[in-house]
Image 1 (cartoon, helix red, strand yellow):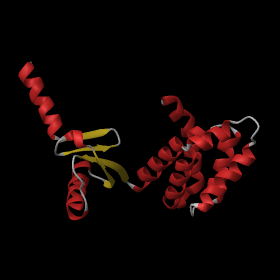
Image 2: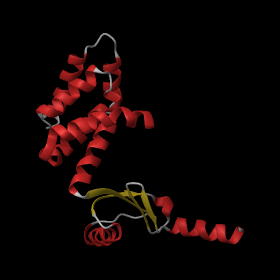
Image 3: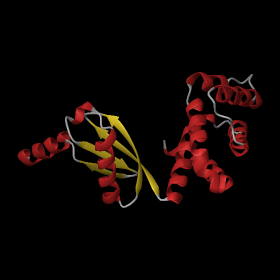
Image 4: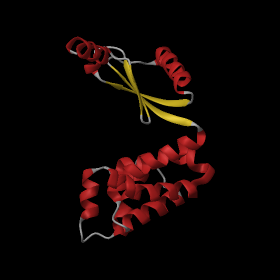
Length: 179
C-alpha cells in the first residue's frame, strides 16, 4: 500500500496547489470521482488495451455527470493525467491525500468513531465536542458500527487512536492477569 501512496502523493499535491482556496469545495467532487474509480468494472474497462484513455475519460465524466457531479476543469485535468499515465487505481488514494492536505490547511482532521451501538444527534455532538478538546483541533467525525467492541468507543484521528472500548479493557485485564 505504501507504493500506491507514493504514486498518489504528487498528484494530490498538484491538485491541492492548483485548487488553491477552492480546495475545500472540491473535496466532494474528488471523493465522488474516487468512488467511481474504485469500481471494479471501470478498472477492467480502463485496463483493456483496446480502450484509449480518452474513451475512459468520456465514460468516467459521463457517469459522474449522471450522478450529479460536474467535473471542475482542474479535476478534469487531473483525471486526464491520471488516465494517460495508467494510474486510475491510484485515484482513491489521491483523493484521500488531497482531503488530508485540505483538512491540514483548514485545521480540521477526519475522525472515525467506532462504536458498538449507533450514536446520533445530541450524544454524537457531545462526543465530538469532547474529542475536539482532547485532540485540540476541529474534527469531521464519522461513526462506524463495530459490535465486537461490546461497548464504549474507539476513536481514530490520523495516526492517533483512543480506545475506551469494553473489549480493550477486557484485553488489558487479561494481560494483567496472565502476566
